Image 1 (cartoon, rainbow, N blue to C red):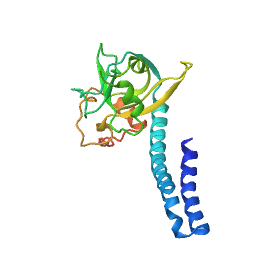
Image 2: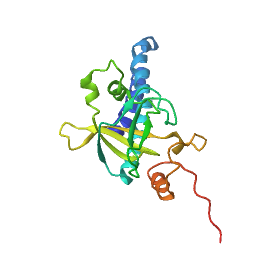
Image 3: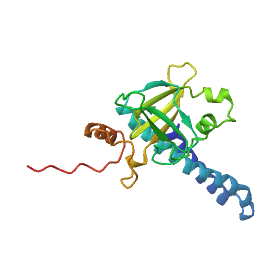
Image 4: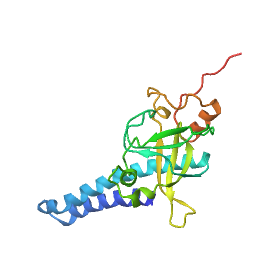
Length: 203
């Protein structure tokens, strides 16, 4: 659907522009401008969709899904998070007892659905309950994909890409991956993280 949108919305924008130039006088521009602006906006949004879908695909190639229940989450600042924002905690990949790693929704593109359900004290219990069971694939020290169960409970939906800023920006503060092994970092790199390549060793 993302690929279809990448084709249809630019085609719609060009089609409207063509119809305006060929079949109407400039005086009718005000009728077309709102639709052309919306088509242009959808073109930009669709590019973000494609980028997110590509990153999700990369993660799922290298990390299996796991089903998690009752993960802590909040809109308030997490003391161990690299940046501020709403967050969900995920189990430490090394299985450390009761140790969790927060992943923040760094970018708010397509995160409104999650915002309404992570919510605060006034959020309806029925909405909060929709996040009691989560699907997760990835390493929360670097990046991952979070989702909720589909209606049948056997597949994920509402897939959303999450990441630590330090996995993509070498100048960002590193707080979570200090216990990661070179193999952990290499796996995350194959899944899309942008760590600098390790320096060659000379003998």
